[in-house]
Image (cartoon, rainbow, N blue to C red; front, top):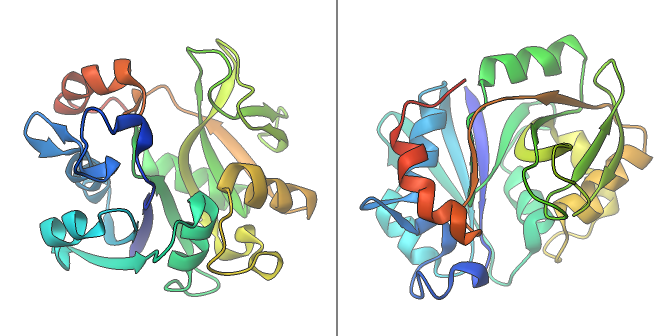
Length: 238
């Protein structure tokens, strides 16, 4: 059974004006929470267990989803204090077996990734973490990815992606060992992009990147939030 961790514990400050009373993943898109679209998309690709890392106004998420979504189980990793993207993953990953690969998603972005292709890439390359990548359409917002011809990631530069360069798409297929858990204190505030992934690269973990051409939206960006309904209600391009 494929498991996905979804990071939904942030404070949602960038969307506070638009959705002041909700956690960011619950921002309404055509009358449905963004997180509803996200879970439905990945359930459609075979994910049957979701671990939602929740914190800020978590009751809105827990009350809406409960313990299942159609035929998929829903579990929760509760952040009593903000743990950042890295701390949220470390907390949620305790619910996954040590050798098991799992999907990792941001609760405020959507990227139309072909999961089967992502899994094949990870398995073919024996990757500790397989990153999805897209071509950035903005300057200095997303993590830049320097990738060798064989797909191996050479460097990760947070917030350095330029227009047209390969950027981190926020969809990962990984083993727990990629999290370098022995190096990071549990229930502390860590960044996935600034702390955990650079530590994995420095430790020699095998990190692979693969580019996808599907639609990408980040609902923390006002322009993306405005067009989210059109993107999410269309059949996803894979």
